[in-house]
Structure formats: structure tokens, C-alpha cells
Image (cartoon, rainbow, N blue to C red; front, side, top):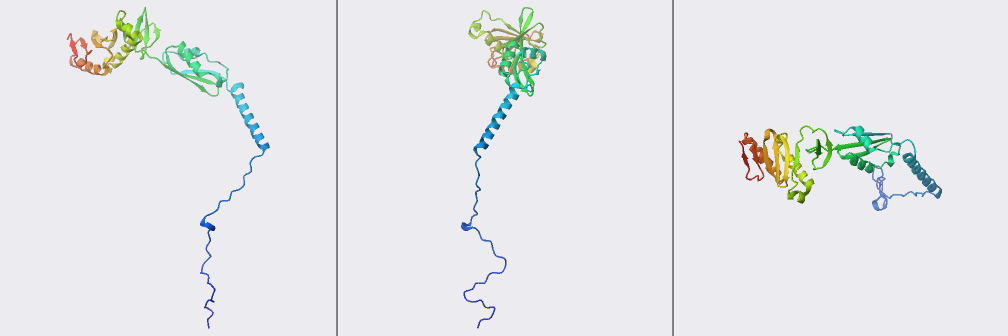
Length: 271
């Protein structure tokens, strides 16, 4: 006879403790998608009308209102020119909608009227200002023209005529009028060659440069302080010629003439 503690046949005793949670069928949770109702025709019409009105208002603000119109033009970056000169040459359309200003046309007009300007960035500064940030051409050499001087920049461009020679800028003598080089290369290329030679000089000698004389493409010579001269030749091998010249000047301090036209076979004389 079974006692009370004996489990009846066919019955299963539950384990002690709380019951365990069962996973959904398949062992994965199911995502339930909630139905999303598409906007009705009336809602779409309201949205479209709102977009159109917003765009129309934005266009009115930019082009028709008095809020965003040109009231001020300012120039920055000038060195020789004055800000007033730049602003006057720009001739910006005052009281015009700022958004309608043709910045590229304004920049072209400035460069045409003031050749000293190399580059200019025209910017809209909201709500009512046009900014002109200019970079001026700087003279590397000077050419005599009557009693005045024509400034030549680092690209060989003649950009301005001045009454007084800027301090420290060497003279350029282009005396290749009867040279075949003038017909073959043209004056523009010969000017660029002269500028490149001046720029290739060592820094210690560049401050002593007084004149660059161009007889032909292959016959460029330099005049330094105290009457010293340098036969440079063409603009080719400029860096090597500069190193050789610096060594010659240091080694032969009393020399008056240096020839580095063939840098592998330099020469000095007049000591």
C-alpha cells in the first residue's frame, strides 16, 4: 500500500520554484507592424500649398524685399591701392538685391580697371554687404619708360606705371631689339626669363641686385652692388648656377666679374 508521499501512477510532480517562461513558437520574437495610414488628398493639398507659399516668401525676401539689398561695399587686402580705389572701380550695384549680384562679372571688371589686382574674391556678406578681398601684383623688376617706371611682376606681366621707382626693386634692361631671340621667343618670354633669373639668386645676393640685362635668351647678365657683374647665360639650370655663384662670391671676395653661364666651368676675373 502506497503512502501519502508516493506519487500516483501517471502523475508528474512539478519541480519546486517558480514556473519558467516559455519562448514563442520557433524560438523567436515576432514583430507586429502597426498599420500606417497614408495622408489623404486634402492633407497633400495643404502640404503642397504650404511648400509653394514658403518658396514664394523666400523668393520675395531675396529679390523683392528691402531686407537683403546691397548697402555697403568694403575692400580688404590692399597694399599700394587704397580701399576707396577698389570700391570705386568695382562699381557694385547699390540697393540691388544681394542675391542678384553677379560676383564673377564684378571681379572681371575690377581686374580690367585695376591691373595691379592679381586676384579678387567677391563675397556676399549677408544681409547687405559685398566684400572685395584683393591680392595685388608686386613688382619684381622695373622697366624705364620715359621719366617713369613700368612695374613687372613675378609672371613677367607689366601691370602699372609709377613716377618713382619702388625701393629695392632692380631694373630690367631689355636690349634684344636686333636679336633673333626677340623674334623667336618674344618680349613676354624674355621678361619672364629675366624675372626667373632674379628669383633664382641666393637670398644673400638678391638684396645686392641692381640690374638685369637681357641681350638674348642665352645672354642674361646681372649687375650687383659696387659694380660687380655676373654672366648668367640662359635661365636654364638656375638653382645650380645660384649655388655656384654663392660659392664664388664667398671664395673670391675681391672679384669684379663672375661667369656662371656654364655652371660646371665657372670663372672669376677682375680681382
